[in-house]
Image 1 (cartoon, rainbow, N blue to C red):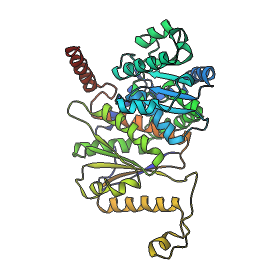
Image 2 (image 1 turned 180 degrees about the horizontal axis):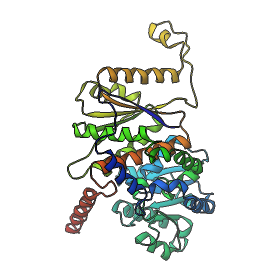
Image 3 (image 1 turned 45 degrees about the vertical axis):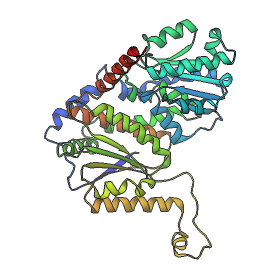
Image 4 (image 1 turned 120 degrees about the vertical axis):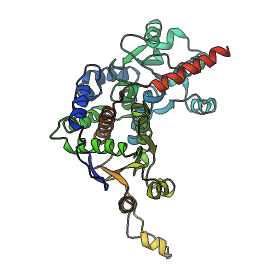
Length: 410
């Protein structure tokens, strides 16, 4: 089970506005317009994904087309848990032409499944990627009547351009529920289909998330969670407005990237917000940690510990120099533990605001818990800041001006 402790001079308590904040949070979780919290109970979405997987399970390459929440979550799961089915994955999640070329050089289009994820079906970057892939298919002699053998669309259940295109081409579809936004969508077919192709047990992901639900929603059982959320809001009001997310695991590096979108896009509105800073240990002890340790005290630092790694290496050696002999009695995981504990002690000594999160090991269940924990924390903090954690007007404004620029240059 996911656990956490807070190290800070500013002690965690339920804020004066807690009862009102909790009411807004609870109403949000149970609103028909907000569906992310109860995704662990929605087995139908997983069964639909399994049906599509069986249809295309012979494919050797999986091309995931999407951007933002349509790609960060699935990429995070695959990087964290790996792939054991021999399928080669590429994520076309940006529009850098050079990266596009490099990525496409890794696949054989004739043996690929192209998974296009866009709720609206109008996302410019996704449309651009599909346009390029259509040319690749045509060069391979694959025409529209055969697109159904190469594409799967994941989109709005009823409306949108991809839904129309799927009907025209006869392409299989999966749905993002209408009440789930992109950055909250990884526990839907957005994440399920790539998980299935990677051999990740999505049902265990949902089980892990379900085990944490009461602690994230019940006022009594979840007191430690609500004290954490209230503490973050209190620190925000004291101008502690940056949030470092730092797992001590290379495999969780993309979890930091996923969290950055969730935290920034959900909370950064109306002149309010908490700026997320991605990091990972022990690597960033040799770069960003100098700032975290001795820079401005305007950061909340989340340190994520994996208590048991699945592999380990003894550091025994025959080198006589002191640096080698100091490490010789230990293992790589013990060194990681020492680095983490050293960082926690130093941050505490320097009176930084630290949250120490622990998972027993990195697997489907623990990752499911981390996802739901981060989503619920985001929503509670958003509600306590009186911002809507589910919209993104700043993103939409940028899209509008991008299209205006294209029109002016057409």
